[in-house]
Length: 283
Length: 106
Image 1: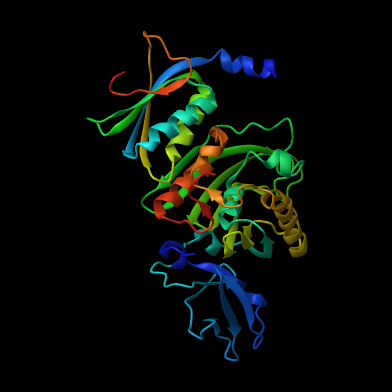
Image 2: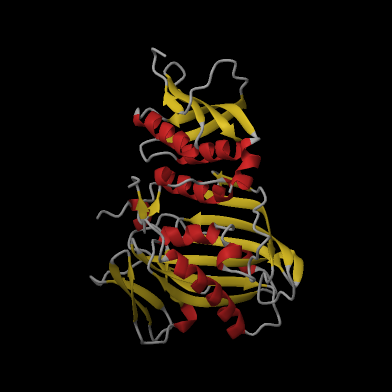
């Protein structure tokens, strides 16, 4: 298949920076192409394609980012990553047999919390998704969902009791979603959780979770384990979705108000021409 | 199940939808009709050639009219719906039983 320029010329996570050991190359697949990541003796990191050519490189948010094309834009900014007092947590990749776009869409979905993350991120009878605001911000070319509120029995590892949690969602790139949620130990501030997805093929991907939290008490292992537990619950759902690609034509589905963010995301993908991992015609 | 649907049925209303953007694909009318029938809405859809937009009159529970707007805002891959405008409509005339495409002859 032909990979559209939009997909080809974007940045994707290919490794966790501090897990790269000097002189020990790692290989990953990005949209069917094999890339090798190496931390050389001079501590410089390089990414090379199968033909030996050097690939673009950006080091940010604890990850190594690269591309099989030539990105003309810088990697998206997460200003919170530079704020004092936050803990940065790399949760590592989780392999998912699903479209990378499906994985991002699932991350944006609030309505599934009580049913998939029962007694953690949601619980019956608190299943209602209150109206919230969704927009495609043309000035930054991003999808934003704001004023999202949901009752959560355990909003984060640091949460001691159930609470109404405020959320914001941001999609700065087709394979990236960032959520902002009430920080349990610091209610006036946002915890930030990013999901960075590397498409291996249209139906297979690695999803890297990354967090920038206000949490001085939890140990690193527990934080990673909590996030992995949540994501593994999602994976069993994601790997059974049909069709496996994300439909950009909703003819066979009935999206409702709770799916407003998903529809905005799909509209945005459609407008950008991001078709890698998408189903264009309903079947 | 009957208990669940009653609140929806009590809340029937009629609205005029206007879909603007790159909506010239004639198959979009079929697509909208299919969507409305799946939602159990009554009404019609037609192309407003002079205005360059698609308009639809739809009657049903508010939640399903919302679902109509949401689905059509994405639409088939051949169209780009830039805006959806909805306004309440006091329908004096008879509404079709089901949903259909109006032609110029209608």
